[in-house]
Image (cartoon, rainbow, N blue to C red; front, side):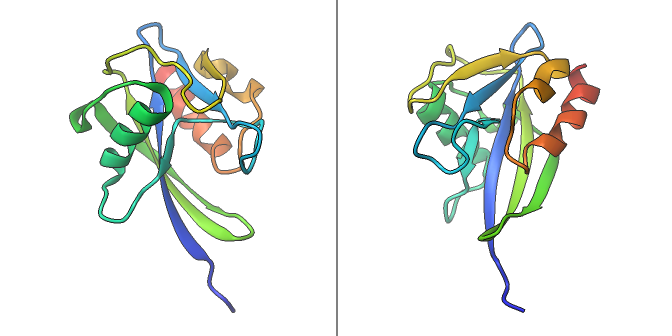
Length: 136
């Protein structure tokens, strides 16, 4: 049986002072366009998941944070057709800057109980109960 390529992606539940979580809509032209996800991205060779999130949060939404502010919560393991996704989810409550879209995506601050109202990629949706338990 052919093995699928393993893809490591780090995701972040950015939590504001009001207890809301930031979601980003995948822009048109990207895979799974129109679905809402937690900000983050592909872990590049030689990078830790924390370094990836620090880089991606700055590039995608203009927010600055530090590794000490990223708390691992859970992870997703999901088999897509072309690859297997392994995605650690971190929670970040301490960051600087105001989240603003930098890559054509829409952003929305969402209460934990309302996360299910947003269509998400198959790997993201199973993470919701952990966030509701933590923040709900």
